[in-house]
Image (cartoon, rainbow, N blue to C red; front, side):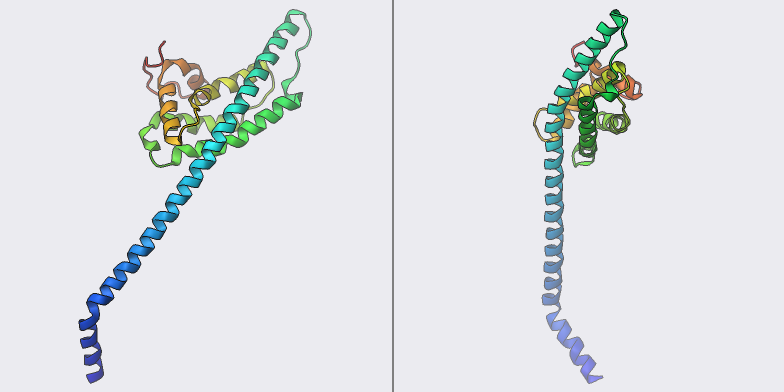
Length: 199
């Protein structure tokens, strides 16, 4: 019994030190977790920025190919000849595969801190990713649809931070300039539009 009293007495004497030590440990653990979370966010942002940059470059190539195939399809139709099947064109299929591969990382941009400020851009990305992942290249019209649904994002890519890209994307999808893309995605009625796009 005496030993227990001595132990309790010692604890009463040293409890402030024990409490401080526990607080220091808790703060250190919390700070470590915060640093780890910040590093993970930075790595994710860098991954998305790289995907956006690559997407923009590849989208330009894809757009040029779409214009060429559309022109050739129109010429073939005028001449009464069958048009080229884009699905048999290795360049087109590989371009589309590349764009699909980048779509997953880009769509993660909507989950980064700060994205909640841009709800319409998030709605667009949530619809755009599955649409692009499921897109095919059966004919020139299908390719043109892919180009159209990507235009709001493609035009928003500026090499800025993900937050700034989301801000640009928000402006694009709420302008009337990209209504055709929103309609193709089936979200034309879900996103309130303004006249800030200039039309």
